[in-house]
Length: 239
Image 1 (cartoon, helix red, strand yellow):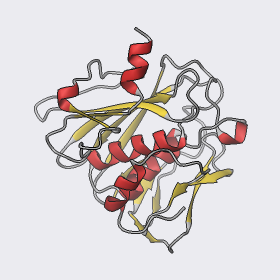
Image 2 (image 1 turned 60 degrees about the vertical axis):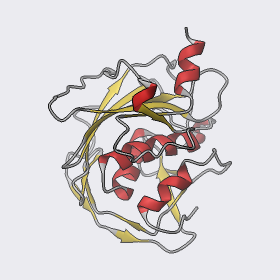
Image 3 (image 1 turned 45 degrees about the horizontal axis):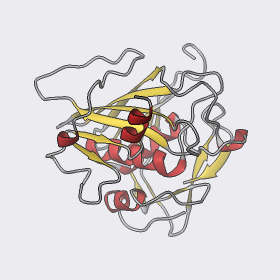
Image 4 (image 1 turned 180 degrees about the vertical axis):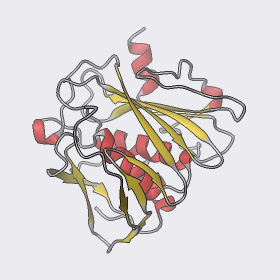
């Protein structure tokens, strides 16, 4: 909550990681508590993205990559050495409060928003990469919010060339783990404001790449929207 915790700004250095090492994932509400890990993937952060777009794997963890970027953080990570930056805003969503729980609370979801932001900044040199990576990781390992908290999250994700809006909420109904997410690029001659509310109102499949589209390349600059494989089925089920 605002006004709680350590307000200091800290520098997290770039790092190299041994093959088959594990990236710790911490509780969103208790950062001293490790609740899982995200097995090793060889190669660069860029090549790792295609791995995360594969179907969900049955593991409590997220693969580490060979090297990670330096970044600044306070309560949330803010900007990495490649000038990819993020700002966070909690939102309401159609996912009921406490319907999806973290793995340490008897649920199936591994990733809260704090680790999701850190993973994006650790591994991506562009905002487009970051939104695609965060979304695919959340689909693979499950996304949750803290008990009693509103269930949506909105991020503004930028770099020197592009600005993106990223929305995410836990999976709905009987689907275990996973996540529903969407991202939209802000046109170069526009500004945007995100004030505790989802602001992406339309998904145009002609401008979007679903993460289940084997022919779509999430980093393709012809794509101005990205979304999860679960988004359209969820929308249809809700009418």
